[in-house]
Image 1 (cartoon, rainbow, N blue to C red):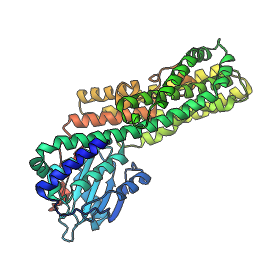
Image 2 (cartoon, helix red, strand yellow):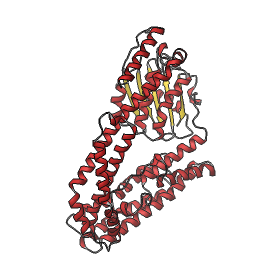
Image 3 (cartoon, rainbow, N blue to C red):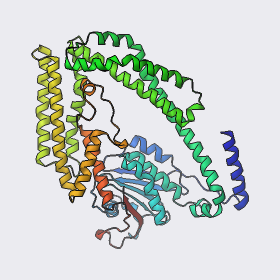
Image 4 (cartoon, rainbow, N blue to C red):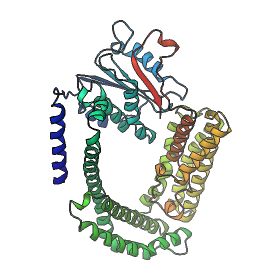
Length: 485
């Protein structure tokens, strides 16, 4: 680290010697922040502090506007329409430009568009507008709406009113011989800092899980010893338990390795992988010992059977509760026959759950029967979601090629076969007995459909920029553009 600082210091001295220090650049946080989150996708508690801390070169008002549109919308036209009706102060006195001192960041999470707009005294080149939008797109494609917005605004602050001696063109011309060294050293420092932060976070996660497992180790063994092996569910959970101690010993070995690392060692990428392996191993054991306890309590009708049963119902109840929000989204075909089937199933299943719970309580059904009925209901929901996927794909796709692309994204989401669809272990009896892709959940449906829409939009050539304000824009010619992600 000391060597890198010395290298960077020498490079800085060379740069100053070649061109002089240049005029001082101001560092000014936004004079005002207006958030119009009409799409309801932003976390204000995260967004506002982050934007307040961003430094511009000149006093700038930041406006954020989100709405749920469609892939065919002109976001520029929509932003202008909204400004004229809701925020006329965003527009210049003559009605032809954006107001001075203003920077607007706009987002359509459904239509998959992002736009940037500036007053005449804050405008940048078309290439720089594209740069600002691109800075947000990787996060937006991953549905990280708040972080993507922050990244776009941060990049805008770096480029708007940028001093000449900080411009990309100047640096390319003047410092070609130094750029590789500066970039390499800077990147090395950032990577090491980020790795150290991530390693500490993973270490804390591993410690919490490992501590829980260690404290409950004896109880876990007692619970496993009384699980009825004749039960289909019990026998499968016991199969998982037979490897429990081996996995615990592995986690213990990993714990010893990561605790032998120095703070400097935590900055290395290879050690981050080691710490993450420890955290994952401990978290898996922590979830499994809870499942072992619940299996014992439920199958033996122990004193804690009721909360154990509630935990088995929790993932299914969350799915049922999310159906209406899913169907209310744009392009969700909420008025279709498959949507009606989902709503009918939800309402009837709420009544069924009460009957299963009552039957467990009075002994008219066995715990195994209750689990069978829960499995069948979740399987039925999966089939209904697949049927509805056919409906929404038919409504959005323009041809068979687009439909195949969207179906593939839905299948990948359920299988968790791509990195963006990381599937996590469900800490329940059904989640232990059946593989993660066995049931299709509402969040997985939403993720697959969103990715399908994004893939189709990109295939349609939606990544290109749009600069006009549409037929309703009139003679308006404010600086700004939008593009798809």
